[in-house]
Image (tube, rainbow, N blue to C red; front, side, top):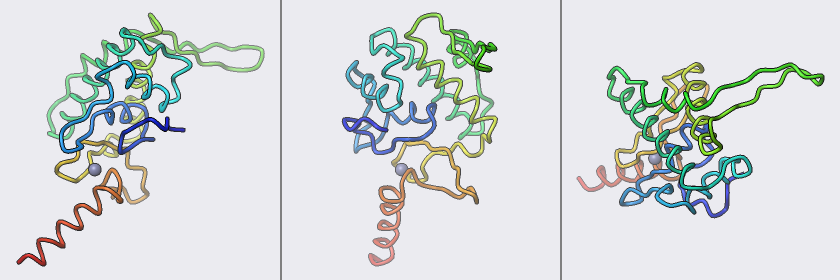
Length: 181
Ligand SMILES: [Zn+2]
């Protein structure tokens, strides 16, 4: 459930893309993670508020993860060979521990310090998206939009962050072009 204070136009994408979507174009580029209170809102929307401290260390780690993800996604969009170094640096701060308990198998994420948890989970989520299909990671087709989404549509033809916002903006622009001629 998204935090009602969350000002972002697109929420609810998988965690790695949801982190990327803390930057959006609202005329100028907006950034939810410039301050601790914005970070707190993001953690709350992502369902991580109980597990991750909204402090400076956490914000720095999470911003580092976002930078790493942004570079990788941009490389893919520009069909360049990605440099996974920065993401691996984030992933090096945590690991998945598997144990068997009396109640059954349990997976626990262990991180060097609590501040790395959100960053590590977002980085790990990106690996999971790559396994599901890197081609489904898309940037909204509207030229002014910098939002990303994971295309889970059956035909793989989702083009917009949201039809209501960017889809209709594009349609209106086409209509305007046609009638202005
Ligand atoms: Zn869009």
